Length: 469
Image (cartoon, rainbow, N blue to C red):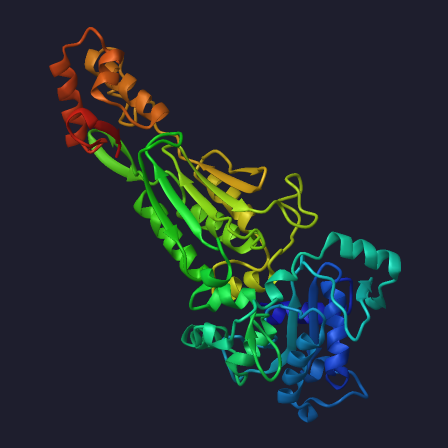
């Protein structure tokens, strides 16, 4: 949201490529709709309607004569006037002092994010911005824009047989209260958010069902997360698995909980004092999951998001390749929302920033912890993010164990290096690493590391193996 200082600076500069300023007297639903769709069809920006005396022009309505309620209503009507519906953050008032609800109102602001997936029109005309002016798109640039965009129609459609009763209205009421909907009804907010459609008889859209549905998977097959924890560095027969359904917010929370519960905390011993450290920043894991949930291609029915945990990495696989004009080369610079209604809903709930800096944040937090940067790949059927675990010390314990002057310490170094590479180790594996050592001595090595909390015993008898704890 813009601050008072931001608004003053923008109003002083006037209209530009990303800024439109309308006086309150000219801010009709039609004029506002043209301004908003022009921003949406270019690179986004903000529409400002000043209401403070120092910003109103001579010959226009005086601040005391401006109907603030009607102005806000006009802004909602403008959002509903575009085709397809323009889904952006709700209009809001900017005050001189954001902390004081009684301080002077400066302007009404409506922000339009960059990277929207559709081409928008008002009464059959497509507008864009050229410098500081609104212009009509001619045939050739309009065709080029349509070729570049056009993936967002699916989420605004309604599945056959669905009704408003398929939505969880208690969750919707909590959501509208959180975003400060004011006098607008939950139905009106859902209309502006692209979660329902219709006039007399409202029907939920696919986006609405994914965000607020009672049974989302009834309508969108495969709209779920498959989370799996493997013990080693590759897929094998030893794993923990959970299929996570429900609404998208529920999927994000449960997937995050699965990652935390199944994460192998790395232990270090320094001066024989143990300290634990998570192998991944929690915020990076969360961003990877949220980005997959927000941006996957839900048209690929039956395909799940996969969150795969290995001993040395986490892979988050998302159905659908990169959208629009985004490529692996420009991934950090370009913005494009395949699912604008879903992205806006998750942004309202605090899961994601509408600015689209989640991937940038993943890079930053991994770098701050001196960890390998995330890896991004396009696969045959989708997109994959890989986060690599924090590298352990040579032995996972301390310099004393790695010391070449002690035979046991050299054995432990070999053992722990083997576990890092293969994810686990058995008694048989350890005997092959140290063939000249008595088996009972090797057994005591395992007991020692288990008691010190460095490795964990899994299974019993012939099925016993050890993993880093």
